[in-house]
Image (tube, rainbow, N blue to C red; front, side, top):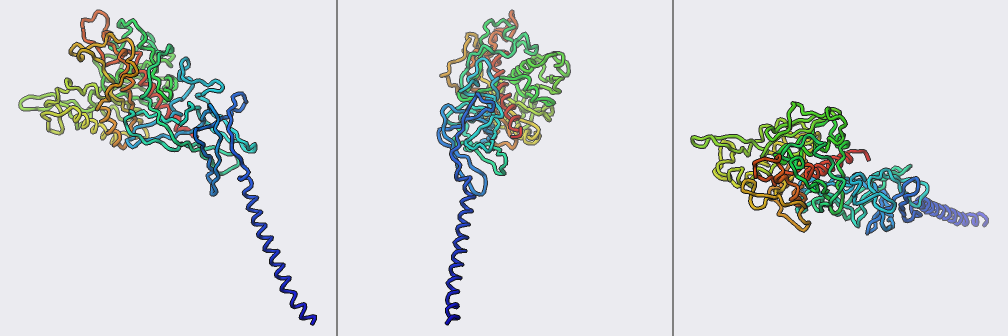
Length: 544
């Protein structure tokens, strides 16, 4: 009987022992999961505050809609930052966006490069509790005291949505960047956080107004020896100086003030080459004058062949000795070859729209190329298209200017794609610059003498078809080309032309120049936009 009782009790004990072990294991598993999740689950909303008085600058971030900080790991957790009024988005590293036509866009981060942009008339300043520009290596802190998170960058103008500068005309469809991210380095953590900012708004630098600014011009006729007679309006007797003091102010962003020293550093050891008609020579002379502002010894800047700038000669190469760089100009009215062909018994002047200009070998190997053509593509200068345009051995009896222009630009684009290395060379194409003749054209009594102020902002000129053609061709190229769209902003500046001041006093010529531009003047703004693009690319190349 005793043996039987002992035998019956053992299964019950075994069952109790198994149950206890199982329960302990389950409890241990749940406890382990709870412990592992505890650090994440106890994290609260990260409140980011800006405090300009502390030794370590803190930063506040806000959008109209909450944004999320996502941990890039196997298990994702989302945390939202509270909105703070009048806060500033800082340190966002904006990646370059290319739209479908490869027209270059620049983020507002790059456009508002430094507070020095406009020291006396800047739209923004970096006072406490206001927007700051040019502040770097700021830090922000949340409600966790154990970790320090740092981010470097520059302040942006606070708006309801982040901005992106579009250097092309607003009529061009662009692909908006939906997400902009920065990497926040966390000490002691392998994974990184990504701040995603949505609903980016396009900032079109072609939309804005001219602002009178007493801190301009950036040079004078007396300080620059490279302004030729045709652009030296003050020397030729123009008394009013207001045309020199206008600065272009986009609606939603800033164009940085031209920094001659920084520009020279950007082109140190490089070739900056302008290629095009006399309007591009206008811009090239402006660039020389702007750069001279950083040169202490003018003797260390010279034309390599000893040439003096005149309208008669079309090729120049100025060397800046201290920076081992050159700023060059090569004339070409059409970018394609001007030649001759036999029609019947006569040899006539033609334009080879299927052959690149014969001086193209000089452009090769440049580090920065700035092209233009438009000024000569007129009914008068192309003989109304009659027996003028040539392809191979055929001279077209008649061809529309716009058709010939498109064919010529296609020839140019093929040359760029074949001979330009995009890793070495940055290519720009400047849009057409408007003329402002009234009462006729340049050869039929047209004038612009009465103009002394920009045209009111309500004016909207017609967008040139040539610009549309250029944009379309650039969009089909393999080589990235930045379109410098200066047409609209220049169209307001009827006051900026030489008019009767394109020649020295006493000249017998009655022809007024309402196509070119006085220097200092409007082309300085074109070069500020060019400088903005170059500086933007430099900043993008820096390690995060």
